[in-house]
Image 1 (cartoon, rainbow, N blue to C red):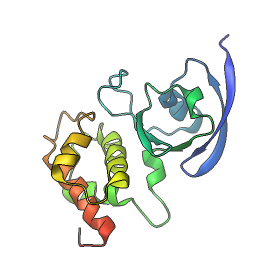
Image 2: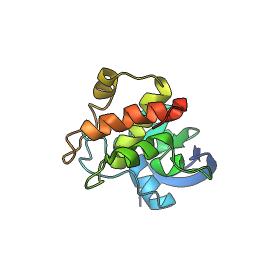
Image 3: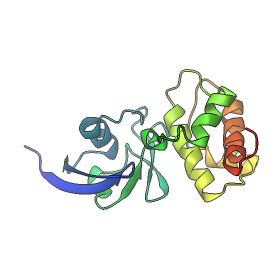
Image 4: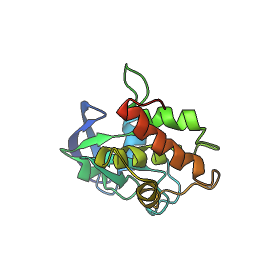
Length: 161
């Protein structure tokens, strides 16, 4: 029997509670307890970015983040970017640019792009490239992903995408 700890957090703008194992990762918690499967388990070592979430405004690898560390935190997953108004500017730009192929890395890429744009809405191409270094895509060659992040910046500004 493993030790469980009760935590509460704000998940995608909704206050929630959960009972988590002391060795459970945030990724495991999100998938098990909340059926949020956007963040993917790929490397399990924090090297690929497929599991990227935003915790208190900072991007994190959910595979390496202990679930107990989410207690009292504000957590955003790719599922939380969609609102009644529609998709987030980053999601729309990924659609516009065709910045997906197999789609496995896409949620993590979108979350890292959202984090980058939250920090710097007028981001340069060099900053995009540097900011996406921890997110691996085996299919696209990154050109459309970089274009999507640039496009999201324009959408946010109200310019034509």
